[in-house]
Image 1 (spheres, helix red, strand yellow):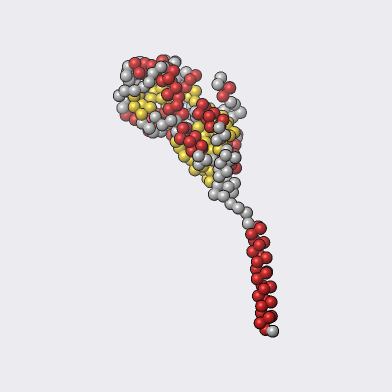
Image 2 (cartoon, rainbow, N blue to C red):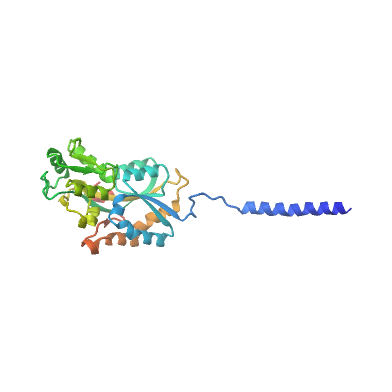
Length: 292
C-alpha cells in the first residue's frame, strides 16, 4: 500500500515538472548573433572618412543617438563593397558611384542615399616637373604627368580614389607603367605621405589633403574639373539576401547621417580649423542635382 502511494506521488510530481518545462519552452524565443537586439553596428567605410578626421566627429553622436556601438572598418570602397557582398557588414559609406550601382542592382545593398560631397585635387611638388599647375582639365594633367615621366603615386587599392584615377588614365588613352608610376596599395593618408616624402604627384580628396596639410610640402596644382567631384553615399546591406545583418542598426546609421544633427556635424567639420568645411552636405539631393 505504501509503495502504491509513493508511486502515485512520483507520477504526479513528474507531470507537474514536465508541464513547467513545456511552458518554458513555449516562452523561449530564438536568437541570432546579429539580431535586432544586438547593439553592435558594423560599417565599412572609405578611408577618407577616417583620414579626414570626420569619423572622430561622428562616432559619439552616432552612438548616443542610435544606441548602437559603432565598429568601423576603414578600407577602400572596393574592399568595403566586397565585405557587403559577403554579408559581413551592416552598412557601407563609400564614394564610387559606378561600383555602388553595381551592388545595388544585384541586390547586395538597398536604400542608397547621397550624404555629402567634396572634390578630388591633383597635388604635387612645387617644382612641378609635369607643368600641370593651373590646368582645369584633369585628363590633360594626367597626360602631362605621363609625358614627362613625373613620379606619380597611386593608391592601387581599388578604392573610390583609385577607381577614378584609373578612369582618368583611360580617358587620356594612357596605360600607366614604368618606374615613374608606383602603387602603394594603401589608404589615402599613407599614399599622400609617400608622395610627399618622394616629391611625387597623386590624386587625393580635398578633405584628407587639408587635414594633413600641415605635415605636407605638396601643393594643390589642379582643381575644379567636374570630373573630380567626389560623392559619398550610404547604403544598407540587404537583409533579405543576408539575414544575419543587423538591419535595424543599419537603418539607424543611415537615418542619422541624413538627419538634421548628422548633416550639421558633417557641415561643421573642419570649418574652425581650416576656415572651410571639408565636406558639403547633400541631404535630400541625388546625383541628378550634379548632372549625373
